[in-house]
Amino acid sequence: MQVETPRSSGAGSVTGRRILVIEDDTDIRATLQTILATEGFTVETCGNGQQALSQLSTSSIPDLIILDLRMPIMDGWQFRVQQRNDPALAQIPVIAISADASAQAAAVDAAAYLKKPFDYTSLMNTVDRVLLAFDRRKLQSRLSELDSQTLAMRRLKNAFISNISHEIRTPMNAVLSLAQLIRDGLAGPLTNEQTRYLQVIERNGQQVLNLLSDVLDLARLEDDSLEITLDDVNIAAVMHATVSAVMPQALAKRVDVQVYVSEKLPRVRVDPVRIVQVFRHLVSNAVKFTEQGTVKILAEAQNESSYVVVHVCDSGIGIPEEAIPKIFDGFYQVDHRLERRHQGAGVGLTLVDKLVRLMNGHISVQSTVGAGSRFTVALPKADN
Ligand code: ADP
Image 1 (cartoon, helix red, strand yellow):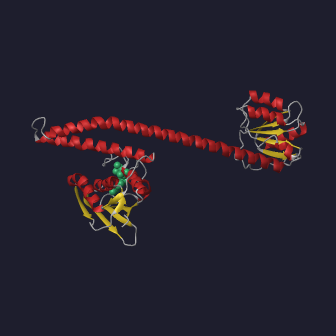
Image 2: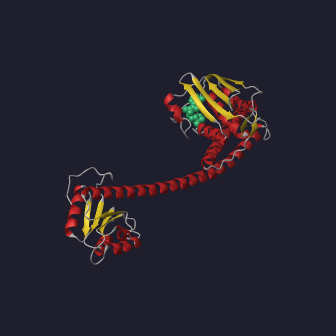
Image 3: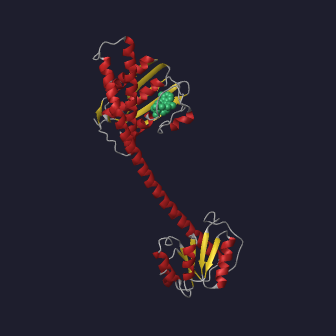
């Protein structure tokens, strides 16, 4: 066997990788040691299986074993039996080297076999191949370990969200009911100022409840546990429900909300409750990000298309081009500073996107900074 100049290893960086050579023939052992060390491996050697086992019990585990089969005291087959029975050693890949016929050598059940005499290239190709396969297996098992950890963490997070939502919702409902009771004059007459304060309490409390239910829905969508019920829905009715929900917000600013939706549009096949939630988010965003101007809701249906298309357009601040691909990501906000002008948690559009998909539709957006945005939702027509 000839020692050649080092070549680049297919097994990636070999720095710090350790190989144990178990071989009784001193010449072959020395040659293997020289080649592998020249290639950058840290090499340890032993003359038989028993020596190897005692060495392995005191030193750290090597990345690979090169094992001669015919050796005195403890041969390669006996060594393999011991190795496989020891959980600390069982995973180390083995290249068996032997002058024996392959059927006999196969009984050792190694990762690869080399028939003596072998040359430099076939040795290094085999070492690279076995180390690569071993690395890939290790990576795969690490990945599946990480997958199950992620799943467990997500379950934990969602259980936490659902507990905390319940813990906040219950007292908040009590606060809101009492605020309403006082505002209705059931606890005595109120001044105008007191009524105004109570309205602020109710509005803010309601915002907290809405955010909680959005976060809870998002957790359910991640778990695939959010159930939707599809029905034939008139999109005009959805728009009326949506607009009346965002009207106080629009009236408080100088934003005009216009709806162009014909009652004659074909019905869509969606969840009647979830579709209102979708448009409540889109229209309320349109109002929120428009200081002064118009929000238009338009719906259209082409005969040849199987979708009804609804556009929510505003003349607001717009979205920078580079941010558009990110706005549907959870908790993403173009302006994420704590002192930003617009309230929000960055949950709405993720929820909208997931809900629309769940109802077999899709959403897209076009926007120009300073000129406004157009969110377009395509919803499947109901079968006639
Ligand atoms: P938020 O609670 O922040 O509104 P969303 O998920 O609804 O969360 O929206 C994510 C981000 O997308 C917003 O923070 C905002 O930066 C941007 N965005 C959404 N709708 C509009 C819009 N109509 N005009 C401008 N920016 C918008």
